[in-house]
Image (cartoon, rainbow, N blue to C red; front, side, top):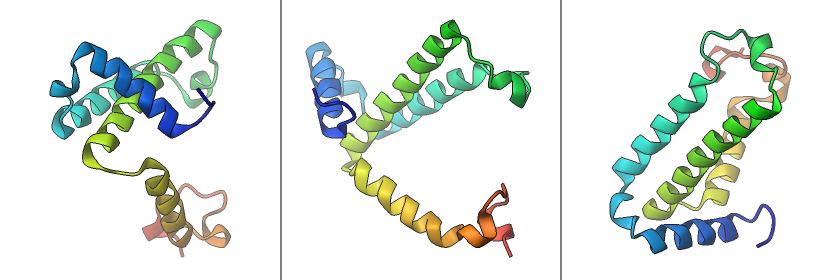
Length: 118
């Protein structure tokens, strides 16, 4: 498998799913719920931590975070597959859209929402 190839990753995910007959459970509603649940599990690792504490990631913590982000990405890729969304196109389109919402001269170094930029 080529490294960082979305199509190849999706093939591996679908092969894993097919062997277990799990496609029956992977409708858009359930996949969206799974993404939200796994995102909550990722957030749980940072509960009651300061921003500075959140940057201190031990090897053990990194492994746990990697497992959570993998779950989120797997379910996201399955969601895109089931709904016919081209992930690469969606990401590139969103970046292009955000370039107009967040022009560098107004947004650089700012955490303001695009509606607050002047």
